Amino acid sequence: MAQTGLLAAFPRRLKQLRIERGLAARELAAELRVHASAIYNIERGVHAFSLNRLPELGRVLRVDVLDLFTFPEQSLRHTLVDVSRDATIEALRTAHELLRSWPSTRTNR
Image (cartoon, rainbow, N blue to C red; front, top):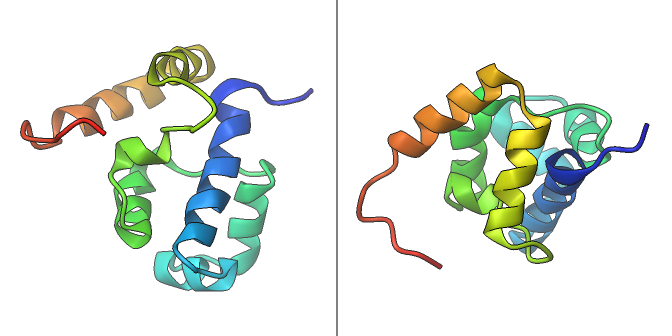
């Protein structure tokens, strides 16, 4: 079954950000303390990335967590709809907590 929405878009976004930052998959893996094959598999959509590690991924890629889910080809509204459609209730709760922990002074991009 082909992945749609967030499940299909996040791996592409991860790879895009990694390449924009000039990081090889091996370098990103080392920063995250995972095997390089894990990064390759996440970027290919074979494995999912843990929501609990999103803040760490954002730090390594030097982006806000929201930027990990901001896809140039989609509006934020469509992205959020995709998140809610694809996610489990636990994933939505985790995302909610992450959003609540952001500084209130965050500027829109």
